[in-house]
Length: 232
Image (cartoon, rainbow, N blue to C red; front, side):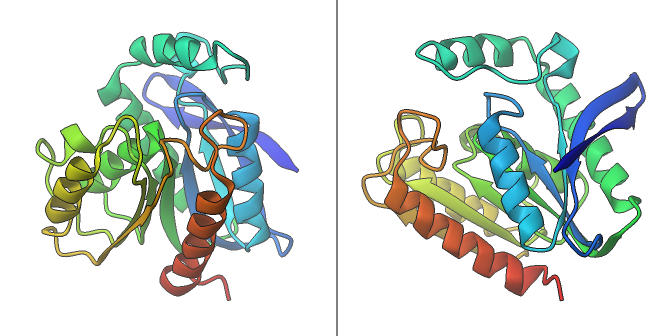
């Protein structure tokens, strides 16, 4: 079960959701949404992470344009692209940073704080830790990374990156360039790629879902979290 909370920003409250582990406390994970918003899929992943022992915060990054999530359906990508186009990137980074700072001071968060982002959130997470390092970053096919790696400093935060080898938006030559760039910031970097997997392969509500790639990537993610931000 999640609880609805407000995250303070300079412009007022930002709605968010928080999941707590069974024990009530643990390291914190800031989960950053896809372009579909705080969808059922993102909420399931947040619950999965809480089940591993983390305090999980998911801010509603589209709140400034009056949207929490894009409904599933045949036009979901078209609608999501239109919504994302109305969101100012720099403001979204500021809002995500506000959420990260709020998570750090949340009662029950002990043992460090990391960032986990999917698609839109995968790139956003990189921009966030470039501004304010965290204990780790897990980025699933960060859609903004092809542009960000040349525009923002390399990050010192340890990071794990997942990409499909058949990604319609990020070809493998771009993945190679991203890998070579993010590895120069000093933080340990892991890259995993998945043959035949397209963009958004982890989203089981979307047409490009790839069960095998999703399960493999999640196993890698949970192992990485256990090593880099242990709960016990």
